Length: 264
Image (cartoon, rainbow, N blue to C red; front, side, top):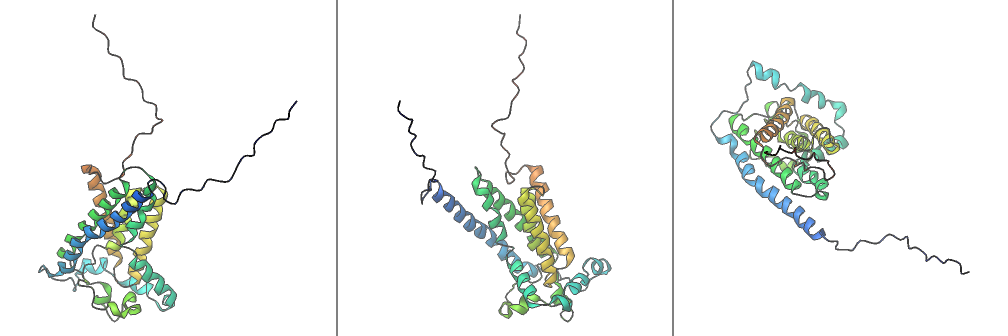
């Protein structure tokens, strides 16, 4: 009787090909989203640069309510001497400049899903971005570092003196788009979702950073959250196709339709 001979099984995992099916398409989609995002934001950037030239006075002499809402005490507390070591300033600067590219990075988890989810997210973020533009024209506001140059420092400008005078409109500070865009991404994913929690934490971190840097009041960040939440609510109510689509699960059990009584 011959012994059974079992052929050796190759347990080496198969290597994926260098150009896997769909890799080129995914790469092209990523590039297209980056290009579309920056192109779509150009008109808003042009408007922002000239929004303080629409004739409305720049808010510099605050009334009683503004003095309470636009208090610079948090800026002063965060700029206390014991928080002014160089490493923290550089970390704050990196966080500060990352706000515009963050929505692009936030689309990466979506490329494993079918459909146009990355485009939906980008469309929603661009809508929030444009929604902030009218406020820059209607309420041009001196940021803390201009309003009180002797008491509030502009940390980012101290680290990089070459940017001094490069901002065409430093009075476009209410609401803070630094806060509004990551807040919008968090809302889009949902605050209970893992990536939504990450983006919400980042929105709070950048809110703290822009107050520390002297570029925004605390209320500017509150207005940024309010802007993102308002646009999100409007998109949901009007059913604009910018939020996540939720297809029905393939394994869901669907009740059969009721049979109508037949005519006698």
